[in-house]
Amino acid sequence: MMNISIICVGRLKERFWTEACGEYAKRLRGFCNFTITEVDEERIPDQASQAGIRNTLEKEGKRILSAVPKGAFIIAMCIEGRQQTSEGLASRLEELAVNGCGSAAFVIGGSWGLSDEVKRAAGMRLSMSEMTFPHQLARVMLCEQIYRAFQIISGGKYHK
Image 1 (cartoon, helix red, strand yellow):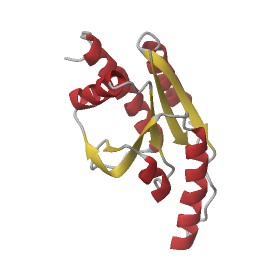
Image 2: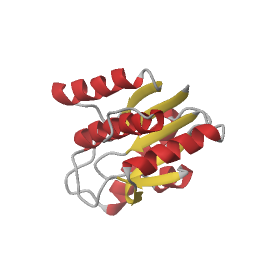
Image 3: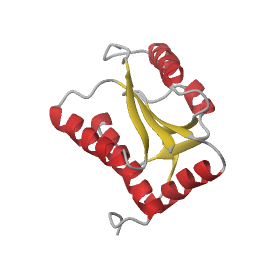
């Protein structure tokens, strides 16, 4: 059984986001070992300089990389990533498993994104959309898409 993790900056604040992620985590139990790891968000002033933003990203990036399971294939969720269909994501996860990669880690950065170090460590950069979403909603959407991918792989009825 494949290990799938989401490493994300910050905590979910509203109960409905937590419950939605929990529902998909429960559904995923039959397909993979699924975990969500939250790392601390770095505090940054509203009027931060570019150097301050870079420093924030580097600190968060170190926390992210230290939370990634050893040997996991890293998928960075970032705006400059490639957009993928649900079938494409399913195919990629299946390909990883067939090629002996037992672990994949999806990474969601904080409000300023991901550090260059995290992006360089990633084997894949994935973008959900050209639109901007709140990080909490993006996490729920990612959980749903991972569940959908496993439904596609298994030939389930969820994906129509």
